[in-house]
Length: 487
Image (tube, rainbow, N blue to C red; front, side, top):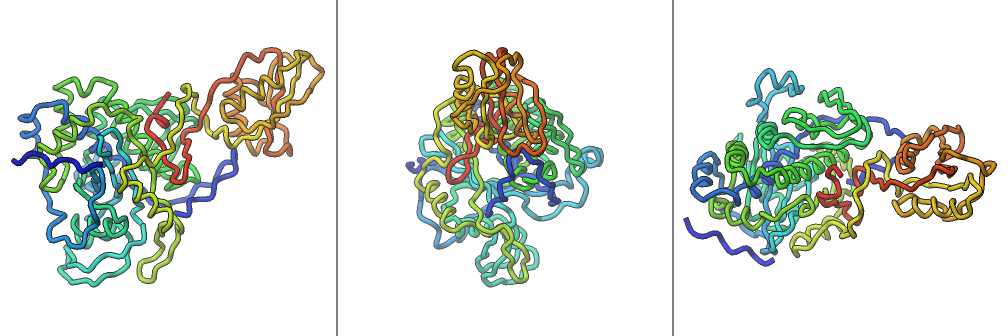
């Protein structure tokens, strides 16, 4: 086999809910996405730690496809390596017991449920993952239908129809046309490998700041930290009926899961244990389809180069959306990308630049339900200690709360225990503030409005840093993996 090629050098979104209010759930059919990046993560992290002979023996389990055959008018070469990841159904390989336990009803299909573009930077120090909604409005190039043999002219469809009509080749052509990003490699993963891979690494740790319950998938997680098995992980990444965030919430949970998987693989000794590593790698490769040029040497080169990867090395976002209900005659409701923002995002990919906002590191913070940046706070000094109100205001502002910066005096000057008054409509915000104040007393006051009122007592001894589960900032709402794993 020739040596690996030298790497080239490098929806509108749902309206933001009012902080603290419980959004109404929205029924949507489930999809699965994290499994394909799960497989890529373990693959590129794992093959760098085992020998060429071992990888060669495992490679026989990979089914080969040729998605680049006879392709013309392709985008110019960019910098770094671009991999198109496609997740297919494959539930026909799940046992009857697993189908019942994890509520995986229905028949399998020749279809994709998730498409992601993964960019590996030229210096092999960063992986950027962009989710492409399967219902994205797309115009498929002229082609011959892989199922019916019928010749089709260029026509509008939802993005996932590209695979149904023309398999990997048409999927690659369509994505390249939409993004103007040249795809270097293609990986397709059967979703049955998801559970097997999670179990092979010993489970994945997930944290949640509020209960997560979805009657459709059977997910039922209380507040706290959880070690998820493969089946539980599948429920976690499938669930979309937890809150009003629906698809957006599901994608964010998938991204948290991928970051947690990388954290587990790099921090638990999996890569240093030959027996466990071989088991994990064989689990992944046993259900992968890849382009013929993504062979043993290429996997080894990529894996070795990425041995220093950690959760902080990965960044995640979804393509910017301009219209979540773009109706197309004969197609139905589609997701229309924001033209200007999506062009800018994919230009960053082509230029091999980060998509997440680079922020200074902060101390590890406790997870809360509502971001401090969405919570308005008025501080009162309930004691006779001069400067206490300003001290509390400054400390809360330091962890992100929107304080008035003008503390007032309150009470009779003899308040011993700090308490918060809040309008019950903003109870989630109040709980987040209470966590920062060490679990102080919370007193509901109807009609108070969205501003929380903190009465500082003599027991005040500091503020605990807190953060929401997703601190998405910047134009593309991207996050790095270390921002979303358990503290």
